[in-house]
Length: 187
Image (cartoon, rainbow, N blue to C red):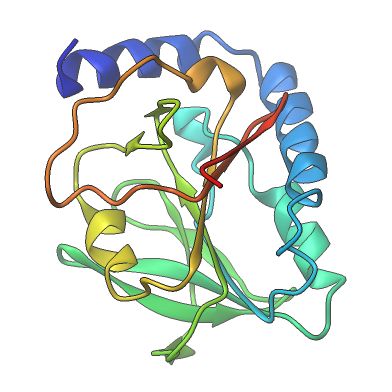
């Protein structure tokens, strides 16, 4: 299958999940994320904000964990043209949907951190080599190149796993993928 076929197939699988299934699976993803050794040590974490219209794994349980960690700084993306800027967020940050329906922070706390310890990455599918396939805009591939030392963790449902994803030179491989059933590691 080519990338477009993989995307179409993955979106169809996701849209067949019920809201209750997404909620339960997302809670399990958050529990599994805590088993990664680097998670409790991280001082700066960048996470996408889930889009409920796309039935993505919900990041609400992850943010709930982060808000209980006063020593960790939390960042989220905001789309600016074909790039992402980094916004520092806290428990009381207000979010509003952008033109694509993706929740973004409604504040001006834009940052350019020199280092981010962990980056949580959305995806549609992943393979056993921890290649990921997103929605096709290339936002995260471009963003991740700015933070080569960050631990890159894909967040997915276990049914998002495929045998092989066709890759290109600009694609960035993940260090881990955390699903509702397992933690996959390249190490």
